[in-house]
Length: 315
Image 1 (cartoon, rainbow, N blue to C red):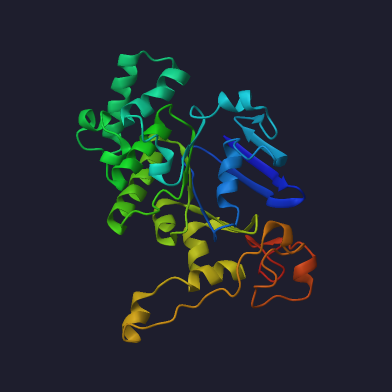
Image 2: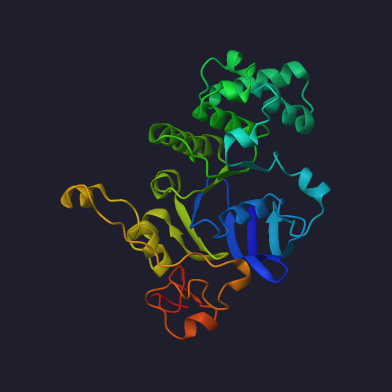
C-alpha cells in the first residue's frame, strides 16, 4: 500500500529526513522511536502529504502504486482520511474546543463519504462504541473539555478511523496519559489494526508501548533511519550505538531496588544537533562512544539492519 524509497525532506539545504525507505502492507504494525528532533513526526507528516510549505520533498512515495512525492494539495486531499489518516499529538490541541466531539467525527464522513447527517451520526456512534467510549450517545454531545484525557484520545482514534483508512499513523498517542490509560490505548490500537486489517505506524518515545503495539521497529536519529528490524529482535539485540544508548537509558526497577531506591540513569552525552549542523556522514557522530574517523565524513552503509560503519552483517 505504501512504498517509500530515498525519501528526503529538505529545508534550505538542511535535511530533516534523509533517504528514508520503508514499505507498509495491510496488517503491518511499525514502531518509530528516537529523541525529539530525530525526524519521527516529519516521517509521519511526509506520509500524509503535510510537510511544511517551505520544504522540498524528493524521492519516491507511492500510495497504492501512485507516486505522491511532490503531488499537489488537491491530490493529497483525495487520499487523506480515506487511505492515510493520522492521530495527532495532544488531544486538547487537535480537537476543536468550540465543537461537540460528535460533530467533529461526523464532518469527514459527510465530506469524504457523502453520508447524510443521520447516517453520519449513526456511523459516529458506532465508531465511539468501537473505540470503547462509554455511553456513545451522551459523549457525542459533549465538548472536549468535558472528557478525560483517555476519552479525548479515543475520540481522535474514532476520527482517524472514520473513513476506513489503509494506514493509521499514531503520533505519540500515549503522551500525557497515565500508565493504565496508556496501556489501554496501546492495546486498542493494536487490536484495531488486526480487526480492520490496516497498517499502523506507531510513533512514540515510550519503548514499552512500542514493544506491545508493533511487530517491526524503526529507530531514527537526525533524520536518518539508523536501525530497523523486528521489534523484539531490535530491543533484545540492538546493533546501532544509538539504539543501545536509548535502551540503556530506560529506568530499571530492579536496579533501583538494588541501589536502595537511588540510581543514576545512564544517558547519551550531548544532544541532537540542529538540522543545519548535522554531521555529513553518520548523524550520530560526535555523540557516539565507539565512532572512528570515517564516521563523521562518510555516510555509513546498512549492515545487518543498522546504518553504521561498525555494525555486524553484510553491507
